[in-house]
Image 1 (cartoon, rainbow, N blue to C red):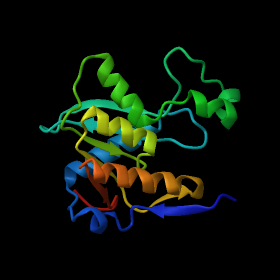
Image 2 (image 1 turned 135 degrees about the vertical axis):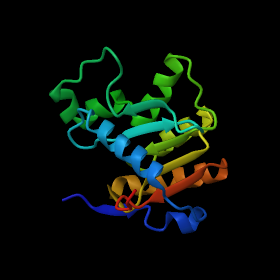
Image 3 (image 1 turned 180 degrees about the vertical axis):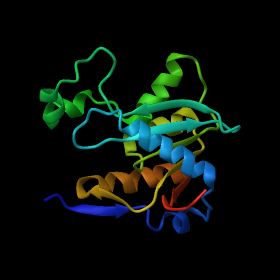
Length: 169
C-alpha cells in the first residue's frame, strides 16, 4: 500500500485568503474531465489555462508526446513511462506555444498541485495564478516536490489557491 499525504488543506491561509467562485468550479470540473483523456493507468491529471476574460487559452493532460506510441507496456512500466511522459501543465503550455497563443497573465486550473518541473514551466510561461482542488491525496513520494513547487511559485509572485470541490455554483 502506498503512503499518501493530503496536499492543499491549509493552502489559502498560507498563501493569502481567496474565495472560490462558480468559475473556479467550472474550470476545475473541466480540468477533471480532460484528465480522463490520459492513458496513464496510475495518475490522470488535467490542466485548463484561462485568460482574463474567462476564455480558455489551452488545455492539457498527462501523456506521451505526439507520435510516441503509448502502449500499455510502456505506460505500466515506470522506468519507461517517466522519461517519456509530458505532464498536463507542460502539455497545455506546449499546445499554446504550438499555435502561438500567449499564456501571459493567465490562470492555470489543475487537478493536482504542480510539481517543480511544471511550476518552472508555469512561471516561465507567464501564468500568474494556479488553482487546484483542496485536500488532494497524493503519494508520499511527491510531497517534498510539491512543497518545493509551492515555495517556487510563491517566490515568483504567483497566486496559488486550493479550493473546495464541493462548493456549489
